[in-house]
Amino acid sequence: MDVKLVTQDRELLKMCREIVTNLPHQHCTFSVAASDDADAQAEADVFLWDFEPNMTRLPDVDDNPSKHLFLVHRNDLPLFRERIATAEARIFLKPARRATLEVFLAQALAAYQDREAATTSLRADRDEILQCLIETNLRLQEYDQERTTFLARAVHDFRAPLTALSGYCGLLLSEPLGPLSESQREVLRRMQHSAKRLSRMTSAMFQLSVGRQVKRLPDLRPGDMRECLEQALHEIIPFADEKGIAIRVELAACDHPLYFEAGQMEQVLINVLDNACKFTPRSGTIDIRGYPFFWERRICKSSLPPAAERRWRTTTEPNTYRIDIQDSGNAIPEEHLERIFEEYTSYAGGRDRSGGGLGLAITRLIVSQHDGAVWAENSDSGPMFSFVLPMHRREPLYSAEQLVEPVKEEQLSNARC
Image (cartoon, rainbow, N blue to C red; front, side, top):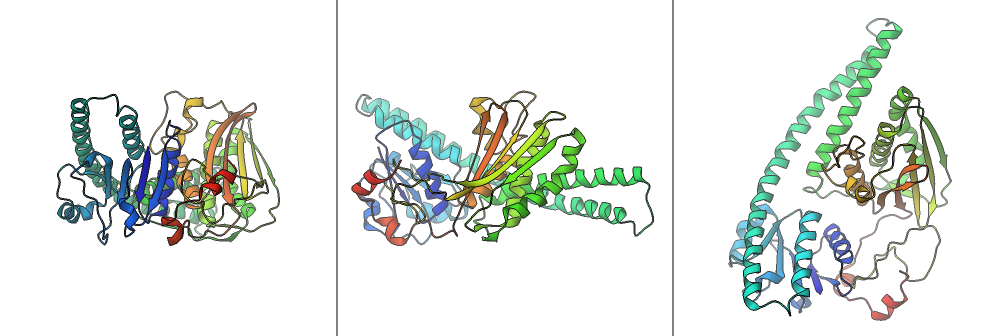
């Protein structure tokens, strides 16, 4: 099955590549084109159109509307309806969610596999049902965006009094209003820690709510991961001390500068460490290791050219810096190792590592914005959360020429899988 994406959005491109690569079929190919490219309308089994008001070329969907999916911003729906008049156009609202695209492409793959066996009547019935589902999904997306907007506004207003509460606790602890007894200071410290924790949760909820609505690139500057970790530990150690958890740190030096947004990376470390403290038993341990690491980022199933930082030659030289945070808590069920990073999801049981899908979901969002990766795995010593950051300053993922020029077959064959 040939899938073609028409877009200039690097984040959408990256997400679609990952989805198509993971489809359970060995004959899926994926390519991308610019909207003004004549090849954008070249033959393919499935088209994904990232609609923009200034697009000069749009397909004729009357012949086969089931092979075209349009990603449209809600504000652009009236203009899209004018340019694509057919009622059978399949529309998903932007920003597109991974789960939504996975369902659509999985259905398209299933239709492709049984195309020869199914009768025309059965295909027509199936397409009609699918169209009804997509129309229903469009309405649900509109309601979901309204709910998300309301939630973002409410959370934004909620953060202000929390910040004030934490500030007043700090003011009292500095004792300009009079001396405090040790028991009073302890109560205020606990209040301040709880207020900061609530503030982090509301910040995570706000960022998850608006993160996909607002395109934001991190402010990449040369940074010291050790300084970020020290700031994160300053926030986490009080919670670890309450449970008698021992935290051990071992960070190796990095020969190349790391580019990241310090505040964002502190948030990543706080989220993962907070999760580790929560599920580490009393008198347990948390081990933090950092070291240069070789991370293979190429995806050979795709027909896209590789990004600028990816290399054709076979090499195992470190190209990222990796952080491992391992705790002595219970193992994570294998089927949930990936899902715990999804938004607002959790698995049943008293040892739910996702915590409602806030901290870990925002962690994946931040790391992804830094062109890195985050994952979880179980080891003999307990669960381990790891993330990698590339040793380079971010450059455009694809140039204009790379967006429309297909990768050469010999390049794919020489690429290291």
